[in-house]
Image 1 (cartoon, rainbow, N blue to C red):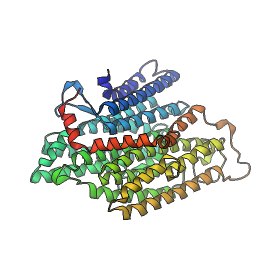
Image 2: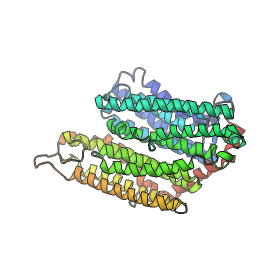
Image 3: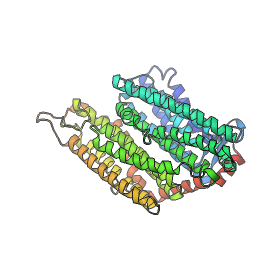
Image 4: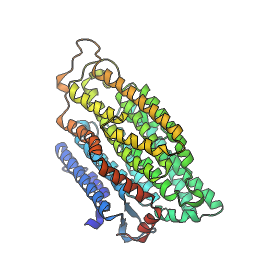
Length: 505
């Protein structure tokens, strides 16, 4: 069964989604919850096993139906993709556990939709061709449309319509770009495209460039890169916090697609099209960091603040994609894991704060005190310190690695001031948020309500996310070695092409 391991992170969520729709899971809430958590736990275990197998044995190429690349559909499990698959599966597990305390009852089919979204995200990370990247994009987007409307109201409907409309336009542009690239290259297999793109001549070069830049538009929309980021703050802030926590991984799919396409296909060995997106990526990334930081400072509630933190993280990640070197990619992978976990945890903390403060919710205004100030305050402080980049948490290691990586770049004179000022803005905004949420009271009789304390399972889910932050530091040596190995493998374009086109299971 080990030879089929690369397909399990896709098959297990699909199986889970189907099982949860059928009796007895479909009719019994307790059974549905137990089955959902068990399947999420199994998927996390399988994803960890796949990571270990790839780390020990090298890239796994799984040819579906026995049809070899470039003619068949292949899944490519390398060190980068399996890391992100494990991150997605673990996040799905945390969200599933958290939702079992009532959030899953506020709308229909919550648990199946979570597993179908995990299916789409894992598939996007593992696929070896661009057409199936499009297919998995659609799977995760369809699931996200429904999850966004979970416990819906007019405000959520408005945000959902904007989100759906923009993504439908993005999907259309995606298909046009794929059509252009297929017409020029005769293939959509990523490894085969990387092999053929350097051989283009004449007008085909310009057509391929048009297709590649259209893909950049699509990935920028999926990843919320300026100026296509405007949908994200309202969408994430209006969604249920448990849904927004799961959505923390979705922008990373767009960043991953940029990394994969513009490193492998249009990277060092792409001839006339080498690094075609780099000038665009760098400028847009810096602008995204600036705009996201302004959004963080201007936010009036913790959920909107966290949504803008996602935008800042996207800008940071895309800046590292633009550098196109092994050290930058390794720093990107470390920061991606850190930022996804901390933003997801902050969304869940915001949910508990909102429930315990009554009508004021998580808005930055004096109101009722929270029922568990020490517990929630500690969780908030840990997440805030990690976001700002203070030791001894993973945010500090990530920021130092990013600054060290960009130091030798000619863009350092622009990036360093922007990034450090953005970090200071985040420190100010989070300090203000913590002071208001935990210290300021509207009047003396605004005492916390004892009956709204968080359930231990909800706290467990948050702690599971937050405990990863110091673990990324404690095991920093091994984690850094893995990230460097993954980045080296990704940038070994010739080796990757030979592995994918040379055979599969």
